[in-house]
Image 1 (tube, one colour):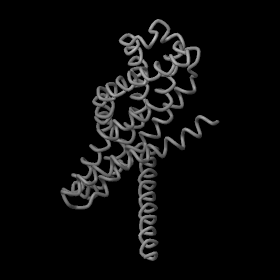
Image 2 (cartoon, one colour; image 1 turned 135 degrees about the vertical axis):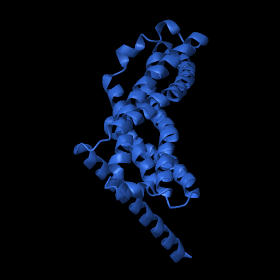
Image 3 (cartoon, rainbow, N blue to C red; image 1 turned 120 degrees about the vertical axis):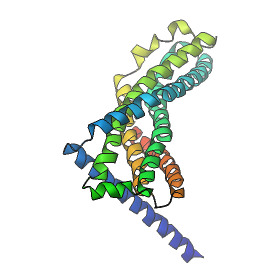
Image 4 (cartoon, rainbow, N blue to C red; image 1 turned 90 degrees about the vertical axis):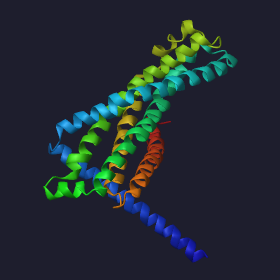
Length: 259
């Protein structure tokens, strides 16, 4: 029994290390293509629109309602502590530190990370990726690099917009709820919200964008040659992205916000 348990644990560790090595290799290959200027500009512009513009609505709606909920909870607790005038800062601090980067990453992972895995997985199953290699075209430069660069640029922009929308959502709740003093909602933000808090949230978003692009593209490129495996690759892309975003968020938080 113990031997079987240790064997199963060993297989899981080996599988994890193998997966880590594969995504690291893909990441290095992507950066090599980026540094050597092997970028498909038309595909990159298309991905910038897909990841940025087409994800803007769902990201802003998510952050708007999240800001409203956080604003309400903060107001209730602040009233108990007689600190209602700081609700605006509480909401802004929460959005910029954690909720903005993490929620936008989840939205992009669910919407675009899954799409990357589905597109590349379908190309893998229909042997289009093999056809690219036969024409001496590197699939990493042609398929992965535009998606990677687009996530690198657009996820931080979505986070910045989401932070503003989230804080505005808290103000909307201030208008609708007597628990928040709407007259002083924005007054506490400039005096208390540090610039580094906003910048650190954007730095988080850059790393989250890297994770989403690499994980989604890796699942597509490594999809087994069967049509039913495309759906499994999409599921793995979303689940792995969310798990790695959580892990990266913990590491980045301890680095960017030292005690």
